[in-house]
Each structure stands twice: as C-alpha cells, then as structure tokens.
Length: 176
Image (cartoon, rainbow, N blue to C red):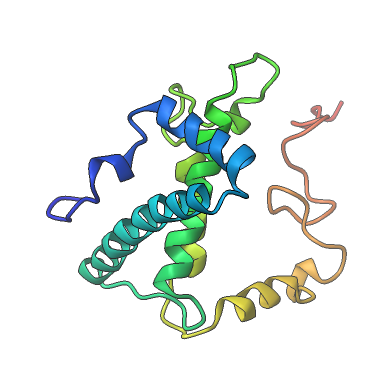
C-alpha cells in the first residue's frame, strides 16, 4: 500500500531466523526467569505496538473501522500470533507429506497460508457497516439456515442435495 508507513524492519520480517529460534528456546526453557520473561515481553510488546500503529493508520487511510467489540490490541495480537505460528511452522524441515495448503509458504501459489489467515482475521474484525459485534456475526453463522438450505442443507460447493454437480459420476452419462 503506497504511502503507508511501515513498522521497523525487524518487525516486518524476522530477517535473522537464528534470533527467532533463540527467542523460542528462551521462551520454552527460561520463561520462568523474570529477567528473560521481561526481555521477551518487551520484544513482543515492541512488535505488537509497531504493528498496531500501522494497522490503525492503514484502516484510517482505507476508510475502514473495527467492529465495536474488537480493539487495535485485539487485531495486532491476533495477527502477531498468526505470524509467529506460521514462522514457527516454517522452521520445520519441508516434507512432501505436508499438503500444500498447510505449508507456510508455497511459492507456486499467489497467496501464502499467513496471507489467508491475515485476510480472514481482517475480514472478521472489520465492521462491514452494520455495527454488529464480532460475537453476534459468529452466532449468526451458527443459526439454522433459511430457504433451500433449511430442508436438507447445502452441500460443499453450494449446491442443494439432488442437484447435479462436479464429483463422482459427473457429468452424467448421455441418455441411451
């Protein structure tokens, strides 16, 4: 996004995988030590604060706002946790058994796993203009469906039961 400020380079990409690995080791082994825990918290807070400022500025410039029950802290922490999780997965050696959709980065696809997670969080946290809290929007998804979906549901792919579509036996054989 042209013209938007960027958080410090260290926040955008952990350019030093060794530093991230050491942080993970310290968290796992030395988190009980007050000095280590405080240092880790300061690093984490600095990253979240930088991103929080970026998100607030980006939303403002794009004319977007958060849902009423979501804060900039919520957005920054959710995206930060997602990023850490994906980076953590990326540290594992690549294996052919991992399906492409579960790989943190797949250079053959235009959208990475982290991008999909980030887009889902942003869409969920962004107020579409109805002022509805996130918890209400989620509850609405769980309500019994109305219309054709009510009687028999909708199959994956959006087709009602009994309506032909891609799958085994598709396309139907021509009538003899």
